[in-house]
Amino acid sequence: MAKNIVYFDLETQKSAEEVGGWGNISKMGMSIGVTYNTTRGEYRIYGEPQVNDLITELQRADLVVGFNNLRFDYEVLHGYTALDLSQVPTLDMLVELQNTLGHRLSLDAIATATFGVEKTAEGLQAIRWFKEGRLAEIAEYCCYDVKITKLVHEYGAQHKQLHYANKFGKKLTVPVKW
Image 1: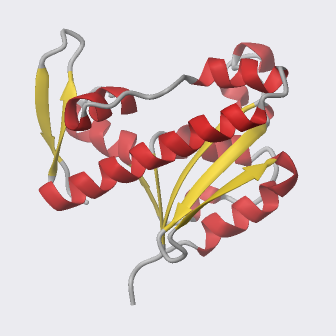
Image 2: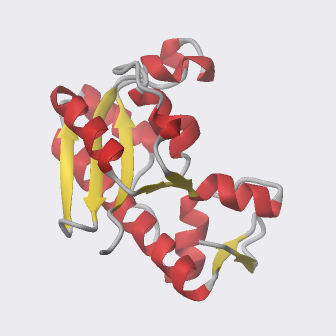
Protein backbone atom coordinates (compact mmCIF):
# COMPACT_ATOMS: atom_id res chain seq x y z
CA MET A 1 0.00 0.00 0.00
CA ALA A 2 1.32 3.44 -0.96
CA LYS A 3 2.28 5.90 1.75
CA ASN A 4 -0.15 8.71 2.46
CA ILE A 5 2.08 11.74 1.92
CA VAL A 6 0.54 15.09 2.77
CA TYR A 7 2.22 18.19 1.32
CA PHE A 8 1.40 21.22 3.43
CA ASP A 9 1.72 24.99 3.70
CA LEU A 10 -0.15 27.78 5.44
CA GLU A 11 -0.32 31.54 5.51
CA THR A 12 -0.89 33.77 8.53
CA GLN A 13 -3.14 36.62 9.56
CA LYS A 14 -0.39 38.64 11.22
CA SER A 15 3.32 39.28 10.76
CA ALA A 16 6.04 38.56 13.33
CA GLU A 17 6.23 42.30 13.96
CA GLU A 18 2.52 42.45 14.82
CA VAL A 19 2.78 39.70 17.46
CA GLY A 20 5.95 40.90 19.18
CA GLY A 21 8.58 38.98 17.22
CA TRP A 22 9.50 35.53 15.92
CA GLY A 23 9.23 34.07 19.42
CA ASN A 24 5.45 34.45 19.19
CA ILE A 25 4.71 32.55 15.96
CA SER A 26 1.79 30.76 17.64
CA LYS A 27 0.01 34.13 17.93
CA MET A 28 0.11 34.88 14.17
CA GLY A 29 -3.14 33.03 13.39
CA MET A 30 -3.72 30.93 10.28
CA SER A 31 -5.51 32.63 7.41
CA ILE A 32 -5.41 29.70 4.96
CA GLY A 33 -3.83 26.25 5.08
CA VAL A 34 -3.51 23.95 2.06
CA THR A 35 -2.71 20.27 1.76
CA TYR A 36 -2.18 17.90 -1.12
CA ASN A 37 -2.96 14.34 -0.05
CA THR A 38 -1.42 11.59 -2.21
CA THR A 39 -4.02 9.02 -1.15
CA ARG A 40 -6.91 11.23 -2.27
CA GLY A 41 -4.93 12.83 -5.09
CA GLU A 42 -6.39 16.24 -4.34
CA TYR A 43 -5.79 19.59 -2.74
CA ARG A 44 -7.78 20.77 0.27
CA ILE A 45 -8.06 24.36 1.39
CA TYR A 46 -8.70 25.13 5.06
CA GLY A 47 -9.78 28.45 6.52
CA GLU A 48 -9.33 29.22 10.19
CA PRO A 49 -12.75 27.71 11.08
CA GLN A 50 -11.49 24.36 9.69
CA VAL A 51 -8.10 24.42 11.46
CA ASN A 52 -8.97 21.32 13.52
CA ASP A 53 -9.73 19.38 10.31
CA LEU A 54 -6.33 20.42 8.96
CA ILE A 55 -4.59 19.26 12.15
CA THR A 56 -6.43 15.92 11.93
CA GLU A 57 -5.31 15.46 8.31
CA LEU A 58 -1.69 16.10 9.29
CA GLN A 59 -1.93 13.62 12.17
CA ARG A 60 -3.29 10.90 9.87
CA ALA A 61 -0.49 11.26 7.31
CA ASP A 62 2.25 8.68 6.99
CA LEU A 63 4.53 11.62 6.18
CA VAL A 64 3.98 15.39 6.09
CA VAL A 65 6.28 17.21 3.68
CA GLY A 66 6.80 20.95 3.85
CA PHE A 67 9.33 23.73 3.68
CA ASN A 68 10.06 25.34 7.07
CA ASN A 69 6.99 23.60 8.50
CA LEU A 70 8.68 22.46 11.73
CA ARG A 71 9.80 25.94 12.81
CA PHE A 72 6.98 27.97 11.28
CA ASP A 73 3.78 26.26 10.08
CA TYR A 74 3.55 23.84 13.03
CA GLU A 75 4.23 26.70 15.45
CA VAL A 76 1.33 28.67 13.94
CA LEU A 77 -0.90 25.60 14.45
CA HIS A 78 0.30 25.24 18.04
CA GLY A 79 -1.77 28.37 18.67
CA TYR A 80 -4.85 26.16 18.10
CA THR A 81 -3.94 22.85 19.72
CA ALA A 82 -2.17 21.36 22.71
CA LEU A 83 -0.88 18.54 20.48
CA ASP A 84 2.84 18.50 19.74
CA LEU A 85 2.83 18.47 15.95
CA SER A 86 6.59 17.89 15.84
CA GLN A 87 5.71 14.28 16.76
CA VAL A 88 3.97 13.83 13.38
CA PRO A 89 6.29 12.06 10.87
CA THR A 90 7.62 15.07 8.98
CA LEU A 91 10.12 15.90 6.28
CA ASP A 92 11.00 19.57 6.52
CA MET A 93 13.01 20.08 3.35
CA LEU A 94 14.44 23.39 4.60
CA VAL A 95 15.89 21.67 7.68
CA GLU A 96 17.33 18.81 5.61
CA LEU A 97 18.94 21.18 3.13
CA GLN A 98 20.27 23.45 5.88
CA ASN A 99 21.84 20.45 7.62
CA THR A 100 23.58 19.48 4.37
CA LEU A 101 24.66 22.94 3.21
CA GLY A 102 25.18 24.75 6.50
CA HIS A 103 22.89 27.60 5.42
CA ARG A 104 19.23 28.20 4.59
CA LEU A 105 17.77 28.17 1.10
CA SER A 106 14.49 29.62 -0.07
CA LEU A 107 11.91 27.46 -1.80
CA ASP A 108 12.04 30.01 -4.60
CA ALA A 109 15.81 29.53 -5.11
CA ILE A 110 15.24 25.80 -5.56
CA ALA A 111 12.14 26.08 -7.75
CA THR A 112 13.77 28.64 -10.03
CA ALA A 113 16.98 26.64 -10.52
CA THR A 114 15.29 23.22 -10.74
CA PHE A 115 12.13 24.01 -12.71
CA GLY A 116 12.47 27.57 -13.99
CA VAL A 117 9.38 28.68 -12.02
CA GLU A 118 9.05 31.28 -9.30
CA LYS A 119 6.67 31.71 -6.42
CA THR A 120 3.69 33.89 -7.27
CA ALA A 121 3.80 36.04 -4.10
CA GLU A 122 5.29 36.05 -0.61
CA GLY A 123 4.06 35.82 2.96
CA LEU A 124 3.74 39.54 3.66
CA GLN A 125 1.58 39.95 0.54
CA ALA A 126 -0.67 37.14 1.85
CA ILE A 127 -1.06 39.01 5.15
CA ARG A 128 -2.12 42.16 3.25
CA TRP A 129 -4.62 40.07 1.28
CA PHE A 130 -6.02 38.66 4.53
CA LYS A 131 -6.57 42.17 5.91
CA GLU A 132 -8.39 43.04 2.67
CA GLY A 133 -10.56 39.91 2.92
CA ARG A 134 -9.01 38.43 -0.25
CA LEU A 135 -8.98 34.80 0.91
CA ALA A 136 -9.27 33.40 -2.63
CA GLU A 137 -5.93 35.01 -3.58
CA ILE A 138 -4.31 33.55 -0.47
CA ALA A 139 -5.72 30.10 -1.26
CA GLU A 140 -4.42 30.27 -4.85
CA TYR A 141 -0.96 31.39 -3.71
CA CYS A 142 -0.84 28.73 -0.98
CA CYS A 143 -1.95 25.99 -3.42
CA TYR A 144 0.85 27.03 -5.76
CA ASP A 145 3.40 26.82 -2.90
CA VAL A 146 2.13 23.34 -2.02
CA LYS A 147 2.47 22.33 -5.69
CA ILE A 148 6.06 23.62 -5.78
CA THR A 149 6.80 21.81 -2.50
CA LYS A 150 5.44 18.59 -3.98
CA LEU A 151 7.44 18.99 -7.21
CA VAL A 152 10.66 19.72 -5.29
CA HIS A 153 10.15 16.69 -3.04
CA GLU A 154 9.35 14.37 -5.95
CA TYR A 155 12.31 15.64 -7.99
CA GLY A 156 14.67 15.15 -5.03
CA ALA A 157 13.30 11.65 -4.37
CA GLN A 158 13.74 10.66 -8.01
CA HIS A 159 17.09 12.32 -8.79
CA LYS A 160 18.65 12.32 -5.27
CA GLN A 161 19.62 15.94 -5.77
CA LEU A 162 18.18 19.43 -6.12
CA HIS A 163 19.43 22.53 -7.90
CA TYR A 164 19.45 25.99 -6.41
CA ALA A 165 20.70 29.44 -7.25
CA ASN A 166 23.13 30.95 -4.78
CA LYS A 167 23.03 34.64 -3.84
CA PHE A 168 25.15 35.45 -6.90
CA GLY A 169 22.75 33.65 -9.25
CA LYS A 170 25.06 30.68 -9.89
CA LYS A 171 23.25 27.35 -10.30
CA LEU A 172 24.52 24.76 -7.81
CA THR A 173 23.48 21.21 -6.91
CA VAL A 174 22.89 19.66 -3.48
CA PRO A 175 22.45 15.93 -2.78
CA VAL A 176 19.30 14.85 -0.91
CA LYS A 177 18.34 11.59 0.82
CA TRP A 178 14.59 11.37 0.62
